[in-house]
Image (cartoon, rainbow, N blue to C red; front, side):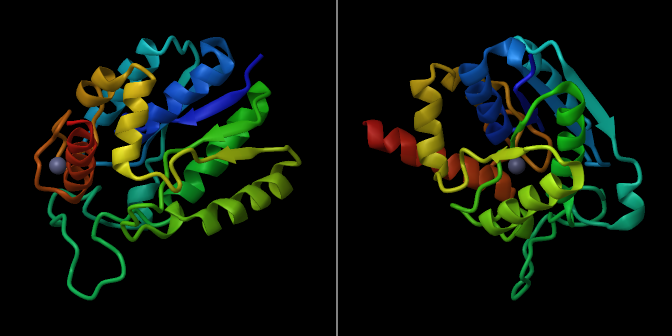
Length: 218
Ligand SMILES: [Zn+2]
């Protein structure tokens, strides 16, 4: 019996979500879903597939959302746009407008199909990066909307909503998967696995948290 669907991007946060869901429900109770929305790095799907395999997930769906690039443009989807945060801008150039709203609805439709009610997503507002659909207020509202839309008791699970990256690394260590998270996830906006390019905002956030975690232990 399926219990949970994990939105799996192949990055650190979604890999941690997968680990927590499997710990709670067992690999047989967990399915994963990965979205290809036109992100620059098709490597993400490769990492997601590898993670699903590593955690014993037999039901992993990869969904193409080709239509996305017809709706919006941003630095994650376009090779020409620089990855930056312009001075005074409310959002970084890597914002993919409405991405999590689409992902969570699609994941929930599939969850209902396979009998699962929990949807795991790695969104966080602890290190708020300017992505409006990562905030708790949005998640609460989206859960309500999805329940009304589907007549299905979806529960959106966000283990890292208020957890810092350093605490997330510490949790990975407690779960015994520090090595997996360190080496087998892809967070970097420039498509470099593990510690990444060390320059893009995603790498900076990840590596700052890692340094803080390491310095606490020493
Ligand atoms: Zn990077």
